[in-house]
Amino acid sequence: MSIQEIVASSGGALLILMTLVQIAPIKVNPWSAIGKMIGKALNGDVIAKLNEVQGRLDEHIRIDDERNADAHRVQILRFNRELLQDNIPHTQEDFIEALSEIDFYERYCKEHPEYENNRAVLAIQNIERVYSEMLERHNFGNA
Image (cartoon, rainbow, N blue to C red; front, side, top):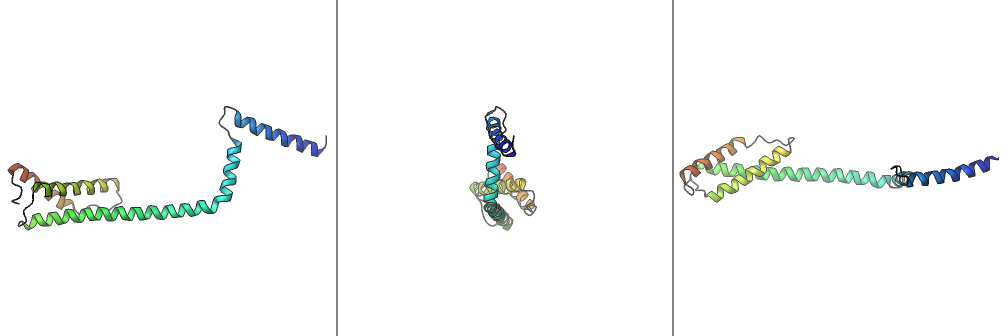
């Protein structure tokens, strides 16, 4: 048997073996693996660029989310400042709106521990205290 016959017969046997392995109930799929390798070789630059773009997009989303949380904190601090001035009456709806700002802000802080979040703790406590007092006295609109 010559080398050419051995290579030809072994190449054919390898082709048949790979096909049989793919059909077999064992989840080994050599054709898919070869296809993935070829795809990665052909699209490597595109995949790298997409990963870079995804990273930049994730960073923009993080910054936007932090700005949104900052805006909620500003609303909390503004409302607390109005309470401390003591000359601006607030309705129960005003308090409900402020409490929803607090809920959003605290939920964001809990879900994002890397976010600096201890900047409105006393304001939140004061808003909740005043709201509780007004609920007990039924005294909304006369803050």
